[in-house]
Image (cartoon, rainbow, N blue to C red; front, side, top):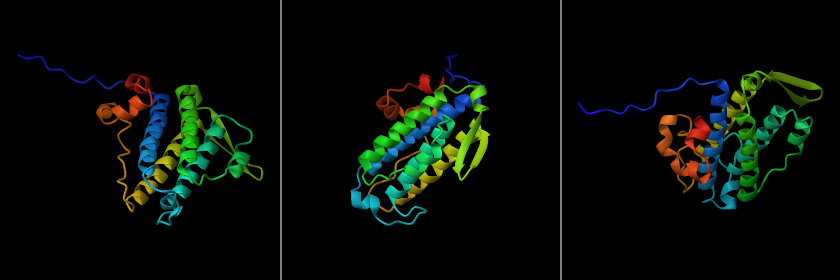
Length: 197
């Protein structure tokens, strides 16, 4: 009887590992979206469209500003609220991409160091005017990833109204989807083992 090969059995996951995978997935999705957006002119990025933030660049800048705020909060940076107020939107794609990449890398670095204690650490979020919101890091990260997915979806939908085909953005979480992200992983110098353990 011929021998059959079964895929590796799924391994038990910690919440810290799942959050780390999500941080890498965020970077990969942003990379694909940025590659698609590079096919648009600056005027197309600024064109009025139907969405909560009525332009592609407006939505991208909102994503980046919020990413920076929550990442500063996760790192315990005392000026997180001031950083958010000082955020200067990018008018061109290239400086936005550079800034978003740096933000994504900072989030990955945070999540790569995360353990059970870190997932359950309290995060203080300065909301201005003396208001401080407190939640556990795991909840803050889950909220941040949901926010990113929500607004990337809006960018994806707005791209449908242009000559650029919106890219596939949901092939980055499950190890069994590895074949769909080979080029992205290689371009970023990542291995499946490094990301998924």
